[in-house]
Length: 92
Image (cartoon, helix red, strand yellow):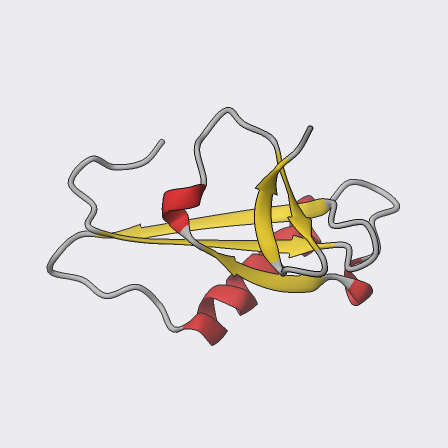
């Protein structure tokens, strides 16, 4: 659950570039006194986590990375990536 005192947020998703299906999501937050990790560090952490937790049969070698706008992400909703727009969209 998000920390209400956090002021910095990041959402990184790994997705299938053909279908836009998200294969792994990573959320990071920091309070006002701390900085978020760099984009490269967030990507590395997301990929390492995906390798540990990916469903059997998910091919991570072809997954693409998207740094999504945290304001566009709400818990409890399902998302995918529009591969052409490279944007997080709500799944229908």
